[in-house]
Structures are given as structure tokens and as C-alpha cells.
Image (spheres, rainbow, N blue to C red):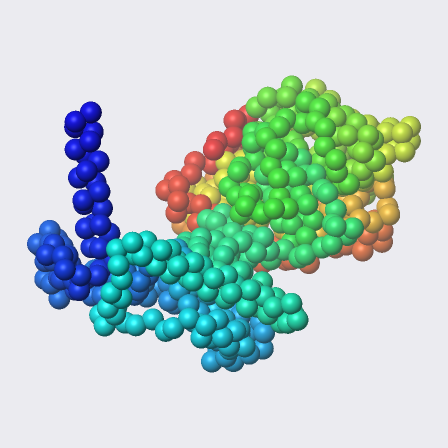
Length: 562
């Protein structure tokens, strides 16, 4: 009890002393009171000795709450200057929004939490009226406290705080006056400016770039060009599913659909597809990627289905022939079931391989083909033939809206460098000055179309009214030997052309009859073989630069390499 009583007595004695020191009443007869400037000088001395800086490296900061001073380093002063620049940006935004000049705004009184309010001159007049009700404040260095008795000190401090609160409330009322609609708009614009100004530089950049990124692709090593996307209202935007959309042809189709402004969902198990082919769309709000095998059912809501999923090069589809058959049959069955349920239109990318080794030249859609049902190519040829049969069975029995495209040899950027096809093998070998290998005597003929022409044909077929099979290919025909020589000359290669034994069931000739495509969907190829090869050679040059060396795939079965 004695210790407690002693502590209470000391508290009553020291409380007035501490209160007077805090208020800065240096004229009172107190030996321990220090003047504010003396306190600041001692603070500078201590701060300088602690940080190892000179006393002149510090400057006086702006007056903050309760009229106290803060001692700032030059680095902190720079932060103060940044906040002033944010205020200037807010003034500029507010001026442009209200149609007033920048000089029509002035800085309002400092309120709590060290925030400033920007007021128009009309609102500032209201501030001035409220200030005239109370006497102006003296500067801190010149003010002297009134000579009051001790019992009135507490009541005087309370009155002073109440006057400050009344002034703040009066100024806030002045910001939003009942009769001025323009002032309300000013507050809304100011709120937006403050919210933007409160972000750091990185966050502001993200906000600024968000809309830009939603209107275009991101450049990547595989797709360095920027592709702009159109904006479509909801009632014009179509939900489109592309199976095998990470593959060679599928990724180019995705580009076209995205640039039109549609919502695109890609399904791919990445057996032959590559994520880098669609990496430039992964950020876009209209794009979705689902890692899924089409041999398993899937539930989606779509308006159109482009069914491209299936390995297309002989080495790849011969690697797992049973899986190739399942992809063409069960995968097509699952997509037809989805199309039936959601009433979507479905397009199947069939192949010129259904004609086998043709005995009719060129091949029209009416030709039934010449296929070996038990040969090494049968898993792909017969799988596509069954897929076509299922398409028209669903059309006839369940009224599913179907389209079938029979695709001939296609080339272009994003071809898999190890797919073992004629174009990719010849380009890879010639760029590395390796022997260019031809299987057989090189007299077999092929026709080659550029990938952009094929994509245009698929798009026209899907959105047209014709629902029977359509050939999509380039009628220009080359022998394999002449084509190898043509690529060797374009690449200025030192490669030698060598001949190896012919592959089993390799077609002797292949050329499309595209009269149906011209008549029914108004399509024909526009890109010449030379122009297409120039783009493709440039692409494989970049791929070789990254990989260092690529070993082409032979005619036998081979698993796709990453």
C-alpha cells in the first residue's frame, strides 16, 4: 500500500510537468521545459550521429496533425514529393472531368491521417467562411500560450480540439453541397483518381495493360507476331470447341477463331500437340485449355465443334495403331454425343488417306477409294472412314448438323519437326546440310497446300450450308524428287539427295479435285507453294537455332518427341 500511494503521488506531481512539455508552453516557470526548436536541434544531433550523416542532410518536413513537425531525411522528402505529384495528377483528372482550369482548384486544409482534399474555389470560399469564425493560427515559432490558471488548462485543450473537429466537418459538408451537381461529379472523379494514385508503379502498369492484353495475343518464340482480337457482343459471340487444338492445324484454326472474337475451348492430350503452339492465347479471357483425351466423354456447353483430334503423320499414327483407331472412332462418337446433347454443329477433319492408293486421278469426293484394310496405314485410313460413316449416321438418325472436310497434304509453321512428313523432313535435312532422303524412286506425286488456306476452307465449310464431304487441298502437283530439289535450291543447301526403299502402301499419286469446294463454299487456295515454303523455312530455321540439331524421323513407327 505504501508503494502504491507513493506511485500515485509521483503521478500527480509529474503529470502537469509532462503535459506542459507536450504542449510546448516554454514561458511557464518550469526549468525542465524545452523549446520545440531545441528539441528539434537535439533530435537532429542524435539522428545524425546514429546514421552517420551530416546535420544538413536533413530538412524540415511539412506540418502534420496537431501542428507538430517531423524530421525527414532527404530520401523521405522524396517520398513526400511523390505524394504531391499524385495530387497533381488528381487535379489534372478532376479538371478534365469538370471542364475547369487547373488554377480553379486549390489545396484544402490538412485533415487527419495526413491526407489532403482538393477543393474548387467555390468550395474553398465555404472553407474560408468557417475559418473566419475562429481566430487565425499563429506560426509555431511565434505563438505563446495564454497565461491561464492550472485548473483551466484541460478545458482549453478540449475546446481547441472541438473547434478543429467542427472545422473539418464544415469543410466536408462544403465538398458536397445539395444544390451543385457538378461538385458531386468532382467527388466521384476525385475518388477514382485517388484509388488509382494509391497504387504503386507496378500495379498501375498492370491496370493499364489489362485491357490491352484482353484484345490481343502475347508474342512468343513460336508465334512472335501479335494477333488482335475483335470485340463481339454476347449475342454474336460463339462458343467453339476445337479438339486437337494444340496441334499444327488446330492451333492455326484457334488463331482465326480468337481473332474473330469468339470464345474458344481447346481439348488436347498433347500426344502430338504442343503447348507452345497456343501459349500466346493462355492469358486471354476468351480462351480455355482442357487437357483431356477425346476417347473419354466430356460435358461442355458449345455451339460449334471442330473435331481435329488424331495423329496425322504416318510415323505417329503407326506408333500406337489401336489408340489411333480408338481416337478416330470412340473420340468421334463422344463428340457426336456432345453435339447431339447441346445441339451443336460439328465438323470432322477427315483425310485424303480414305482414297488409299487411288486409281482415279485427280480424286473427287465421289471416289470410294482403294484402301488396304490390314496394312500399316489402315489404322488411320479405316478409322477416318468409320468416323465419316458415324457422322452421317448421326445426321440421318438424330438430325445432328455435320460437316466433313477431306484434307490433303498441308504444310506451314508449327509443324512438328519430327513428324516424318515430306515437307518437314526435306527442310530440316537441307537446313543442316544433311542427306535428303526419298523413299522410293521419287516419282510418286503429291499436292501441297499452305496451312492458312486450309484454315479458311474449314471455316467456310463450318459456316456454310453444304453438309456433304468436301476436298480441301492445292491442285498443284509435284513429284517427290522435284519437290526435294526445289527445297534444296530455296535453302541453298549442300545436301545430297539419296534414295531408300519405298514404304509399304505409299500412294503413287495424290491430287484433289476441288470443284465442289469452289462451287459449294466458294473456296480455293490463295497462297502459292513458294510463298508458303518461304514462311515454313523461316520457322524451321528458328526451331533449329533453339534446338541446335534435329534428327528427322524415318518412315517407320515413332513416338513424337517433345
